[in-house]
Length: 254
Image (cartoon, rainbow, N blue to C red; front, side):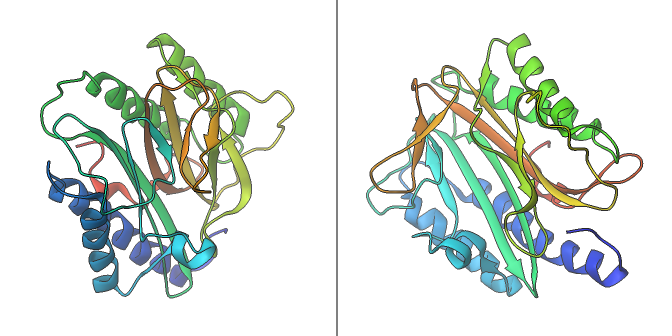
C-alpha cells in the first residue's frame, strides 16, 4: 500500500506494534524443553491481546499462528507438540498479523541459550545486512540494487542467499505489490522503490543453500543443499530519506 493519510499511518503503527511485540516477547519466552507449539500459543495470546489476527492463518489457512523454524528449517515451520527446543538451537520466528484492515510482518533468527553450535555469527550477519539494506532504501532506489547489496554483503562474510524467496509489499494484505524483493541483483528487474509505499524487507542469509524447497507437509521449506539460514525482517515505509521502520520495537537490533 501507499500511505496517503494520517489514519493509514496510525493503522500501520498499531498492527506493527502488535507483531513487533509478539516477536520480541516470544524470543524472550523461548527456552530449552519448550515445544514450538507452546511458543506459538504464547505468541497467539499476545496478538489476541492487541485484537490482531494471525496473517498466515487468516490468508492461507496456515496450521499455526506464527511460523517457527528450528535449525535446518528455513521458512514456514509448523508449530508442533513434537518439536522440543534445545540449548543452542537456531530458531527463526516470523510473526505477521492483521488489525483493523491493516497488515504488518516481521521476523528474526536467534540462538537459544548458549551458542554451542556457532550459529551466532550467521545470525549477526543477517541482522547487520538487513540494517545496511534498509539504510539504503528510499524513493527512486532500484529494488535490484538492494538485492545486490544483500548478496554482496553476504558473500563478503562467506555466506550465500536464498534466491527464490523475497520481501514484499504489505499494508492492506499480507502480500502486495511490489512482490519478490529478492536477495540478489535481478538484472531484468527495473522497478524502483516508491515514496510512501509500505514494504517488508527480509534477509535470507545461508551457509550452503541458494534455493528453498517445500517438504511434503506442504509448508516447511528447507535449503536445496542443506545447511542453516538466518532471516530478519522489518516492515518499513519508504520516504525521500531514511525509511520509517514500523516494527523497530521488536528489538532484533538490540
